[in-house]
Length: 227
Image 1 (cartoon, rainbow, N blue to C red):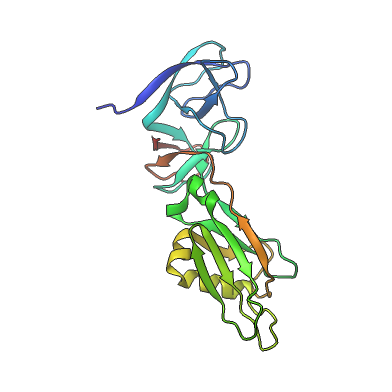
Image 2: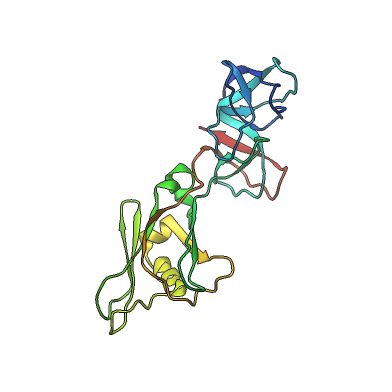
């Protein structure tokens, strides 16, 4: 039984060729669709077949199962979004890379599976200086805000490092279910961090489907659930 909800559109061949099994967005011309102009663009659906001819009718799956062409490796269950102007798809994973003063103290926070997609863009990370002596490092989660209360020594100086924050996060049941943390490029986690105002993750917006199977690499066709 075919459970798809499909709609027939017209190819906007005046922009870029519309390929089969790719995500498409609404064109500026009513009733036409075209490839997305950027990653994370708001998608109308997935094409059944493509066309490079302006005005040719093409069917678009707007809800239900469809086939998509991957732009990179995708895991089963990933929320996915448009990857680029060709309309391939990629995992909709929100991330935040800190940019602190000092060396070896920057981390990359990445949404965990349950927070993939646009939900991940709601998460914020904050490093808070407790302003006291001998404070222990801890994490508090308030809604979508993850607050890291930094550790201090007997003189009130911050002692938390990238490594200690990774460990504290991994040990916090709620926070670890929201994000993971890893050393940023050219960082080893040994450096002391500084206070950081709440910063939001980004990159999850624009998700429109869920992967029903995994893609090992670019150009692989996978089944997805749209909607």
